Length: 156
Image (cartoon, rainbow, N blue to C red; front, side, top):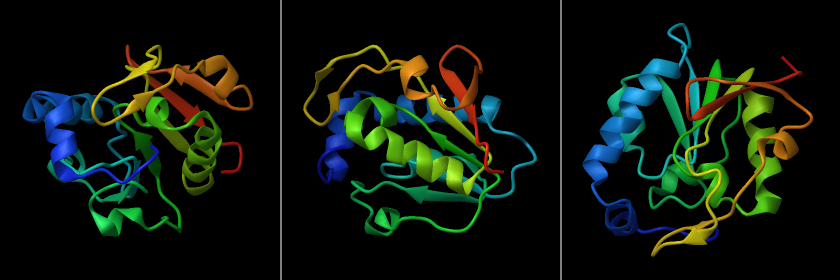
């Protein structure tokens, strides 16, 4: 997450963008709590997955082409999530700020780990590998499904 992305960047780099969005909707529908009324999405990109979920979701992405998503959220949320390569695309020095934001505003944070072990780049993103034991050493967390971690805040 090192620059402002253009809408076409997402379409070009993800390949079958429509399939990616619907896969995200299916995955998140399985793992988001049914009783969460107010949800924060960190790294929302274009917000297409969030719109299709049909929930009360606030989108935040400091590099999104959607200008209103660049506003740092405030208040409190029942749950937060980062889908796709949000943690992998964040610079290592930015990752703690993402965790702090999510866990200061919500009691639980769902992180997608599908790109966790990738180092490299494509036409849009730079990916750096991360270790969940190191990144989350100050938090309680558990694996949820094959590609997610649920991190619990100690401040709620």
